[in-house]
Every structure is written in C-alpha cells, then in structure tokens.
Amino acid sequence: MQAPTLHTPRLTLRPLTASDFPAVRDFYASERSRFVGGPKDAVQAWRHFAMEIGHWTLKGFGRWGVEVTETGAFAGIIGIFGPEGYPEPELGWDLMEGFDGKGYATEAARAARDWAYSEGGMTTLISLIAPDNTASRKVAERLGATKDGMFDHSLVGLTEIWRHPSPDALLAEGAA
Image (cartoon, rainbow, N blue to C red; front, top):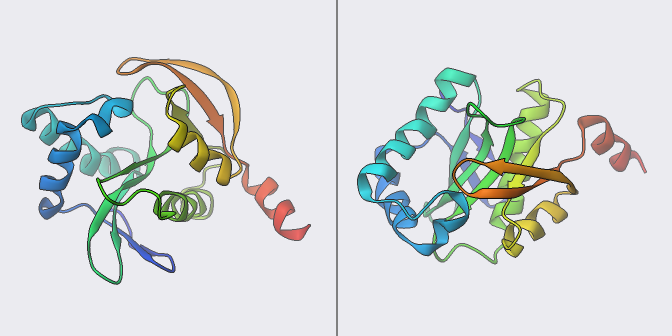
C-alpha cells in the first residue's frame, strides 16, 4: 500500500519520494534528530528513509512527507509508526530545519490522526516523547494527548507515553 494524499488548509501530506531524501539526510545528520535516534550518517539515514516508505507496505499505515502547499517546500515526516517492539501505533512528527514554530506539526498530526481513526481503523494512538523534548510535548498537548506512563525505547532510552484522545472522545469534544 502506498500512502494516500491528504490536504489540510496549509499542508499536503503525500507519499515520500526520492527527492525528499536530501532533507531527511540533513535532518538525521543534525542534532535535531537526537530525540528520534539520531544523529545518523547518510547510510543509516537512507535505511531509515527506506523503512519509512516500506512501512506502508508492511503495515498498511505509515508516515507522510509533508509539504507546504503554497510553496511545495518539504517540511517534514509525520504520521503513524508501528515498528516491531513498539507498545502501540505511534503518532509521530519530525520537522525539518526552519519549519518549526508555525503549527505545521500539530496541523499535519491532526490530519494523520483523523485518517488513522477514520480510514485506518485505529481506536487509540500514542506518541513517544523524550522527557526533555518540550516542543513535542507541546504538540501532544495541543492535540489533547495526556501523559500515560513510560516506555524504554531501544533507540533513545526512556520516553514518555502520551495517549491521544480516542475517536469517541474526539466526537464527544466536538459535540460539547
């Protein structure tokens, strides 16, 4: 299965392409990637990038390449991640340099969560966040997630589990 294309008011969530790799390679070479298993060299980054694309085939869900619709600029990788060893499917977001602080992670993650609940058949999602990753914690809070324990992540160590509202809870919020 290939990732479907989703649209938000400012963003396009679409399948990753080879042209996205240079930005992903640079992301993984930088300290920005420290919360997601980096820094990595170019070979390791390529393997991770290929895994992101293959995740859709293996699991029927995955993460999207996110671009700013108006400019076509590649802003990040956001979506649902569920590799071997994870406690539950994770809603995750990685923004490239220069795209943070604009609300893109929240906007794209909300679209990915909506897809996971409506098209992906999921009823729960978590986000795994390093305790000192305050930016990701703020995104999770904006999405209505609450801290729900800890997880010993094989790549980054002890992480916080942030549980997202269920589809029913989101419907109840909308009705209130």
